[in-house]
Length: 321
Image (cartoon, rainbow, N blue to C red; front, side, top):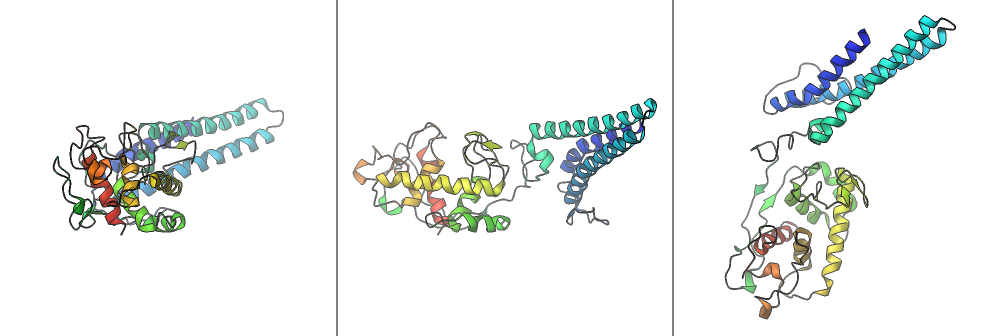
């Protein structure tokens, strides 16, 4: 009975900690004690996260220890039925507690993966305002606005990088590892910044996953081609491969006024209706430019609006310079 009470309390605490962490996001705190084996940082949020991770390990180790003790008791019970039953009870309680802890963890993960990852950038619903996500830093000026106006070949993509992120250093080794001649490190950083602002657990409204917002074949955590797209290394590898495929697919087009990176970025970003943003524009046909580069009749649907695609494609390219 004591073991059952202990495991029940431990599991309750593990379920409660993510909720406590929500309240601790903006609380200033200097920890006085370190959690064994865990980097608790220098604020209350990371301290609570450290306690939670330590608790998960503690429950697992405690269950394993109880199973070992129960096994020893069973071996030593010999022909004593009472001792054997007591040993079985210890083993059963430990296994049941371990299963309950695992089920609790999986339930929280199913509700919101960030509850068990304790990712402070995305625990709160995207519909609620929050300032915990590292915000893009605006610099320079964006390309000329895309409006229902006459085409101007001179300024399709001009200006300077509008969106940069300062929190991508943790992925630098992976970015350098998977960069290629056609998809260099600067371009990978630009895509990550624009797509997820560096949040590996980000999921878009249309289901794109992770750092580079790769569309999964299956689910984000079990893509049939690459695996777990929430894993930063897997996602960067998949994102680079996807962008290289986009670069290969636009070789059929010949538009002197736009670059290959701009066209590949437009294709990477669009479109929800499976249309090709790099098809020759009807309204700007005389200028020999793709649909996304033509500011005339950009389209009413926000998901396929060519002005939105143009802003994305231009800034991806400008930020990769």
